[in-house]
Amino acid sequence: MKLSIVGPAIPNLPWQAKPAGNPDIMWRYDANPVIGRRPLPRVTGIYNSAVVPWQGGFAGVFRTEGMDRVPHLHVGRSPDGFKFTFEPKPIAFNCDDAEVRKHEYAYDPRVTEIEGVHYVTWCNGYHGPTIGMAAHDGLRALRAA
Image (tube, rainbow, N blue to C red):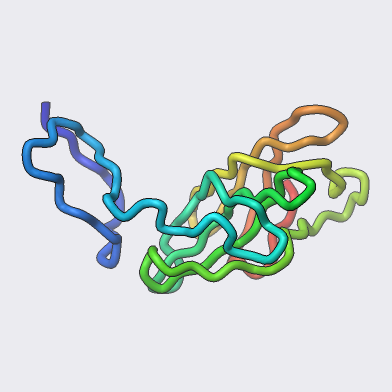
């Protein structure tokens, strides 16, 4: 079976050639993990990245866990897809409704761009498990949808 990816080219996408003799369609980068376990002070781990091309490099939303083991979302940026820097504080969502803006935890982010707007979804804790969604029209500030 021959597979094709349909979408705009990403000329600077980091890529490692398929290892010789590997029968898999997808393979793991041999230098994983790319991001160390503690990318920020008081963060015990980083997981579930959602990375997209951004301004000639890459930007993403990442799940982090603090010393209290509560998951939060952080923005990370990279010029090459390997060396990321992270915003020191979790994402603060902008929303006119203070009640909707509150949440208990956040994990498993996903990001997709549709017609120039980046949409972020994640597993959210808001009076119990929910799905969070935010839109970002320039990665200046996220707003809850």
